[in-house]
Image (cartoon, rainbow, N blue to C red; front, side, top):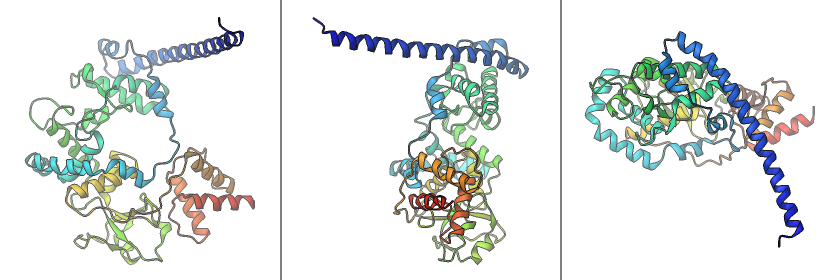
Length: 409
């Protein structure tokens, strides 16, 4: 015999379940209807771009938006990953060991690629390792569905629509068959994770088999990475960067990866190279400074090739990790001085910092929880005015100081 209270609980549960299922169904129907409207509009663009009805219908005729992609695009992590956290994940002992192994295994191929494109092999191996773990993880999601979902829903609609047009062109021109068009949630393809536009314009057939195959051909993948870097402006005269030390009176407020000054200026400020074998280039070379863990952590002098790595991936931490991993693969000494109390901050705390700056009149716009150039500049200005090292680095102590300041307003 089922008790009255149990029957009542079951009834309430059934009503709640029915309610949420109804809401989910209605939401799904709305999304699918809106997606269908977008697809009809996109068809006109694809047709004007030279995509045949056959290719369009084959690739996009039956797909629906991928909810997991929508979640990836809008998801904010609870914590902002610190540079130490990032290095621990990306520049692992295993990845260094594998990188050294592959550099030796493919030495003849790499020498040939480096000769043709004038890009040192350690950078190609590093990017290969970071992008797909040396070809072992190229992604399992439908590129067409991922890009269509992002083109339909993302704040970067135009970017993803253009990438989708190029993905359809790859199919149209029989460069990649639809049943091989799988990769990352953001639409990247192959062992070096090229976006469709880069695949279409920069991928090369280095093994001479008549195909530009970045999925199964190591030669094509590594040569295409080299071609990308060369076209982005790689200068073989420089490394990516070098670790340095600085004096106590260093002008921290000028240290920002996006702000370049002649090397001669930084030499006049007392920087010292930690690698005694480092060859100092022309003093007029434009360079910048990175403080990925603030003024207490490792300090890097960044040469022009660092900016090229940023073109590959716009993340400061990624570009630094690529450079550091390439140094290990080249047999250089590793990064020094990461044993710093680098306490991660939550996304909510970064949003609070941005809100406090807006309250102070810095006008950072809508807080997004991401530490970009505008947020770093605001932190530097605040630190400089408070006569503390203006490294632009957010910390719990900075947040507490800002809270005290805004209480005075």
